[in-house]
Length: 185
Image 1: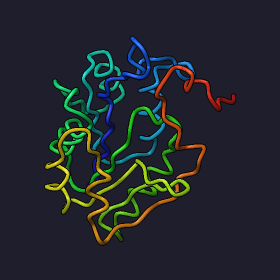
Image 2: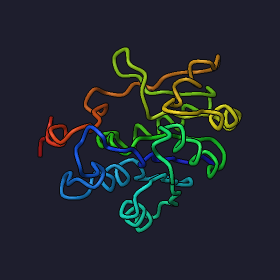
Image 3: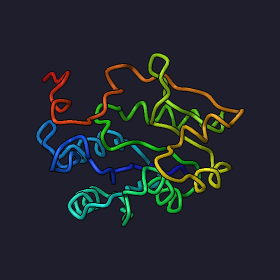
Image 4: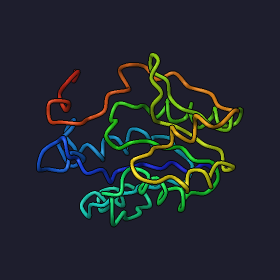
């Protein structure tokens, strides 16, 4: 079994006073849009790490197993570690503020883990999530600290590969102007 981990506990510091994951995106909260999009057709365990009660409730209603990060100020690694602790088998990691990643990309990353023990998405020359790790790298992921992401583990692995991520899927939402950037209906 492969576990899909959605990191949704960020501080939204560049977004302003409101939590960006609750901002309206295509008629629903951003986090719901992303969670629904990436999990379409997903057959494995779905884990969301959040620090917000509203997000936890929304994702729970969508069938995600939610894990609370009581101290997200410790950085992205704190959320990643909490998700990995709950995971079963291989792990796919996605970010809740990347709403344009498709389910087919998630499935491609998940499928690629069968031939390489670590996968990252590649857009142009940029390595970025979603990423996947075979179960053998669990301890390395659990050892992460601070604002260090899974990329630091990926770069140390010899049996690694990338899956192309189209430029229209790599956008992340960091501030309110990003919500409508590139939006077409």
